[in-house]
Amino acid sequence: MNTLLLNTSINTSLGHTIVTLVAFVILLLIVKHFAWGPLTKILSERKQVIDHDIQTAASEKAAAQDANRDAQLALRDARAEATQIILQAKKQSLQVQDTMLKEAKEEVIRMKETAQKDIALERRRMLSDLRAELTDISIEIAEKIIQREIKPEDYHRLVDDFIEGMDDLS
Image: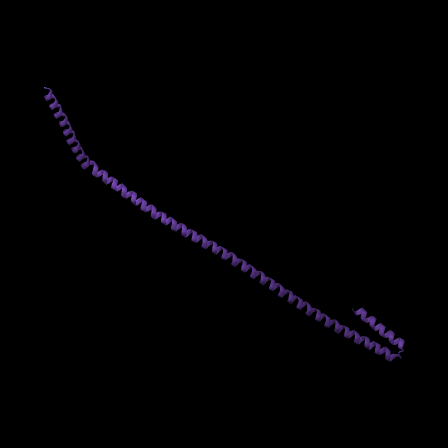
């Protein structure tokens, strides 16, 4: 009886093992059919989404770097243009300054020429007046000389009177 019990228990253990193994294989087939396919499909789709996101991020990073480079170039160009505008404004201000100085100098020269012309005109007028006075004085002296005979003292006195008359004119 001992052998029978031992045989039966070995058969039972072997049967349990075979049943468990068959059940496990059936479970694997069911899992493969119902869960493994959809699970690998979901993982594959997730991998594609992640790959797409990585490619999108890389292209956006490249676009951002391009935009940053373009912005840097635009900023450098703007600075260069601003510097050019400042230099041009300085140049124009110097030209305006030079023009104003030139015009002021020309105005001073015109005023000087006008003053010189006025002085020359006034001088001619005074000389004309002086000639008229001298003529009148000469005529008076000639009349006095004709009216009387002049002694050297009288002549000197007439000349001194004439010179004094000249001093009164100036």
